[in-house]
Length: 113
Length: 115
Image (tube, rainbow over all chains, first blue to last red; front, top):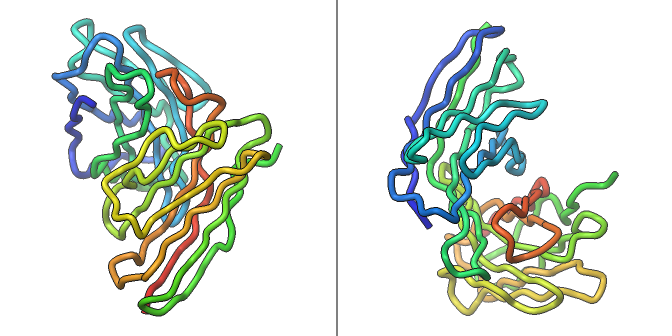
């Protein structure tokens, strides 16, 4: 699976948009970009995923660059409950039966009042 | 709707003992995966099961084993526990096993402490 690079940590103000970057320069054509988050002592929570088009759901938006080498997760109006570790994952190797999630260290996001 | 449920939530064992962790997937999900998360690190893949067959295994010793039952629930077994096995053990379920867009949903985990 392609490797991802994320900043170790970032702060954002409550009510403002939080933009979380992720680099995945070795991504291949059949690999999706997934975002999960993990609030302290809980299991990871699925946020969003995409292949090459921008995606939006009730939680966030995912912007993938045209060359697919990087992406940005946008939390439009961050709240204190969005404080968590956010993981950017590139998933699915060329082997069709390999779909494990490979978590890195993620970005620790702290939303401040 | 019930999500992925894991039991027990917490467990304390001593070195050399054996432990069994249990997972019930979301209704209708046929695939279960297990992950280990050591404090301060991201989850690491241990096993993937689909339709009762092992489909993937991470870089863990043979002391770790798992199985999936006809109702798609799963057990993770760890023998001869070591202090380093202390971790949060996470179970995730998904509808299928092979499609890249398949989403894995995680349970709250079992916190294992080995003394």
